[in-house]
Length: 430
Image (cartoon, rainbow, N blue to C red; front, side, top):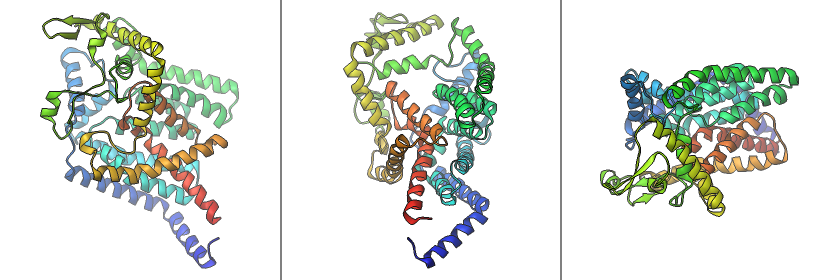
């Protein structure tokens, strides 16, 4: 128990926060914006190829009517539109700040405790990984905003709007396809307790919305490859990279002598998590005697052949080597939850310390909340738990990196802070 005097101070502070909630939240988000702008100005990012890749994708479409078979179409279009106006970095900074406000709206629904709301907003506003990613051209920032907005509309019982936003997000990254349809039924039938008939009807309507929005992309893919491709051709490729005898890290790392010479700050040793030589004899590949290695057969048909070959090879490898599959899955799991970055340029004491003192407590609090959740199911937090564990599951099957963890880190913060505030309220009986 806290003393009466301290209790009065506590209540005064709490009342101050309640009365000025929106103003203070807005101020915190504004300070987050300033912090990110300063960071963008004075912190020199490593050389990432992503932005140029997205621009090249759109230019290729304008010149040849083709989109890279490795990239979903929406984010390259966004980059193309904003890069020549405000720039993709400023765009991502603004989007990241909008995301904080969306998170604030979600936590108000999960629990109305004023300290919970403020602590989540403060942590997400100044969380180092949020600041870092907001100043890159990576697609994760926009993707995180969309899946967070999707969840908000689910919580607000706007199932069809949530479906639209979730489908838009799929056109950037399709990883949340199955959670999207699980959440449609979960919110309708379990969360808002609508009748089964109404829930089923809404589910069918949501599927029709999804189909109508995805149809232009499906038609484009069918015209390109004479085959129905729901997303792009990258999934089986990633499955192959993450499940082959050469993979040692659980990621998809290829570093050769040329990389070491060009980027000595980034790379210091040769690493090879996969080789196309493994695909010798599979459709879509051929052995080039001049280069003494397996090369791609050119053409759209060959692209589909490779798509099928990756699936066949990966299935054969996994079923023929179950022990190795489990070993790689463990490595990917550890890699996904690693407390500091893998990249050489970030594997320094400063970055390690910053990562440990920021993500470390969040991971610990989330782990404690997970134990509580396993004992006592909470319907308000289930959607966040679903997203977190589904993303983890996908990446222990494919390839793993802390970058792939980033889309769920704000959800980790929400649940970790939720656990902390609940325990403190019990401790001090407030």
